[in-house]
Length: 408
Image 1: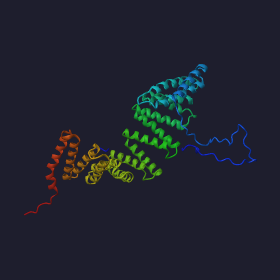
Image 2: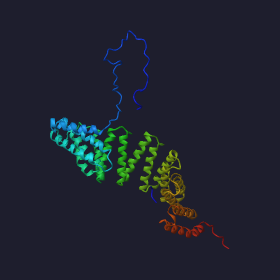
Image 3: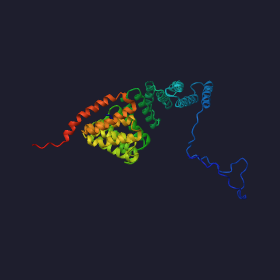
Image 4: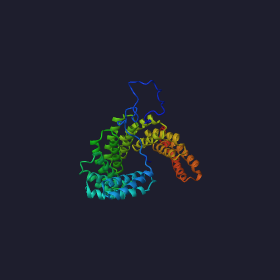
């Protein structure tokens, strides 16, 4: 068994009817606006930028013309080349999975910029570092993490020597380098850089902010995937406390992280702590999703498994039955997920010594398998053998519960 902006202004408003002219307010002179100029500079400009192939081609033509007039290393040419490469990287996001054509065109442009910037500005100049990071990010987007690492490493190392570089930008680069290490299978290096990112984010970013929380959660995942349960548990406890502080104890996000904490305790074989967290998560998911949702069925199952592993099958059975009922409601009686829940219930009955109920549930499983695959379903022989074993155990189980006979 396994755990498993509304538009600005109001268009269409009719003009007010003309009234009598006020001699104290003469009409404006020709060529001047009737109202004071109001650019609304204090309002954010949320107009989306629309990229088109024509505009991208114009960028390429402008770059070629500037290179002919000014030379390949002129600062204006460097800017145009950077913008063109950046636009190609944006276009790459619309490419099918595995397609790297746009990225492969952008990287040589950034490499050319890097050559000129390193020679004229120096290896630690801000623009040089931005280009290094751009090359690394492009390789990473193209799923070439090993090729991304040298450029991202140089960018991060340079950021430590450049006081003009924004600290949050430097943290973002460390996070990107961590992603590259992880993609290249270098988990320890990935975690070390991510730890630096989280530590810096705690100093720089407001508590409870989205970026800080996202980085903590990424570090939690890295710890868990690396099997570093103590670090994962400590960070998970911190995240649960964050969720309780900023969202409240009964928020869905809080329950999700309590459930994560339960899994960590379960993995560490601290079954009592796992059960306490599973029970809290179950209570929350029942209240939010309902007792017959697919979301709750997995939590019922995991809580039951913890009770079984703790040697308390009778406490597991109500949750195994609830998991089965939720799966039947959401998935149907013959879905593989429903049958998995039925198998777990059979095992629970067996462990609790409730053989008659285990037999009835196994017969139900056989009927479902026959409906799905007919009499030759490949799992039927195994299930029938198990059913025979249960039937042979039935007399012994009955004898175990009979009172002793009085002596003559």
